[in-house]
Image (cartoon, rainbow, N blue to C red; front, side):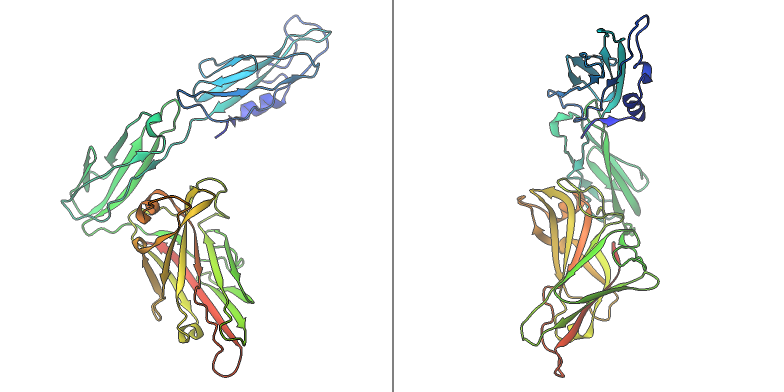
Length: 405
């Protein structure tokens, strides 16, 4: 987190005399001078009992000493060159030079925003589809912990479908029950809320689209502008259908040596993403709620099928970052030949990379963090010389829409 400079603050920092400062004081005579008062930067407001301080650095063109004063002492105070953030809000500070040595007095103001700390609700797990008349308990925790000292309150915006009393959800009729966990904000933390969609009776939850299609004129992008990249051990080619409905990857493997294998993989980012956030959680991507399965269209070429090398490995990269990596889920599957849409039950994924975190639960991870990237790769690539004496064969994967339902 850092201070956020407002447009007013930027103008004040760059224009002499802006925001009520920068000129000579009333009645002062002497050469005009200016003050350079750069945006100080720094973290967000401190979490009690801790406080946030930062050193102010302004210089006068005359070389004479500069003093500081807060115009908003309820938000921030200044002692010497040390600013203390008391609460979130707009902090206004004057840098003053009193004049002397032939120079007139001058003042320059900085105006910036001290942001609140963000908080996140975790552990709020969708109970899944429920029958009419069922009762379940819900729970959630806050990333702010006891520091926020604010309760998490549950409510529903669909009272005809379900009721919420305390932490008890009771279903009343067919439909989608929307349950919200909310935590109010205070001087240190932003308010936050998370809503879960619970199908009741005959109702079905909404589908989430990870990939709806591909850009015909850009083999490296989905229709939603998510980045696609791929790797392979041998010469390969990628094509996209004219209507953007499918994307085909093929690799020509050339080897007359039995058992000489190869590999390839295709990595796809969520909408409008180029990559995972470096060094922190990734907050964008597809967030699983009541969805049960990953649905996608994928086929493999006849040579792969004939060689019984049709296993695919699917990796889901989550936004959960720890120890220099992102938690990743894994599933091995065999595409059903002749069936257009393939399906994987989300709860059958396993933890492929825990990033050193103990006791991770797949469903909890999917509920708490977005799916930001996915990958298809082939663990059993066809490495047999085809019948007919040639040493060239092709492996291919064709992908269509990728959704979660």
